[in-house]
Image (cartoon, rainbow, N blue to C red; front, side):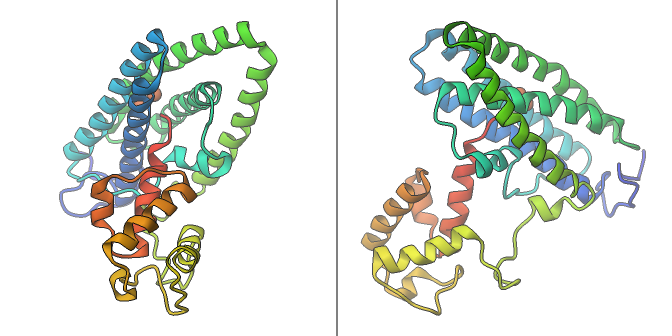
Length: 287
Ligand SMILES: [Fe+2]
Ligand SMILES: [Fe+2]
């Protein structure tokens, strides 16, 4: 069996691909899963009977793709990594949440095309592990079906609302997609820096979410502590369970996310809250 990775680096232990490729496959897996969850949520919400069927099928296939990557990772001797973002969460960082069905369809179409093009490119990289190649090929074949049904829906939208509004939306998203892809391509051989844990505190740099959460502690809970850090225990600030409920509701509103009871139970620090926000935002994405 080939003991070298697709980027030519030697591998350690039982892993038959490089650590970098493991991060990359874990990122593919996470993005498929996020897309499946979004499609499922839309399937539950839509009033359109035909769309409900399409979205449910799309959900099922994206979740199956997430499982295909999971199996592939296991077959090459790895375990799926916990990934902190998805390809599509970068769309949302640039565009905000899609607010209409047209936006969701257009974004899905742009993304599905990107997936197919990227998977074809990945297949052409040197020394792709045969199991990875097999999964890439299978998914390329299946993503084509997603492009088809979304295109049919976009054509129907054009017929009712005019071609121009659809073309403009597609052009806007296309531009964002090209920027996102170009940015990510820079990290092809250092993918952990994209998908892996961020060491914001270690670097002394707090990102935007943590910064806003710190302000919110002062605004919502009236606790303005200059020593407050993302890793600080909220209990140490005297934040009790009722305060936490109030705070989490304010955070939901501020970041336009929804937390489960489980999320609330798991929160001990602002870093935990930030992680839940990223998870929730990561789910609002399309594969
Ligand atoms: Fe997929
Ligand atoms: Fe897809």
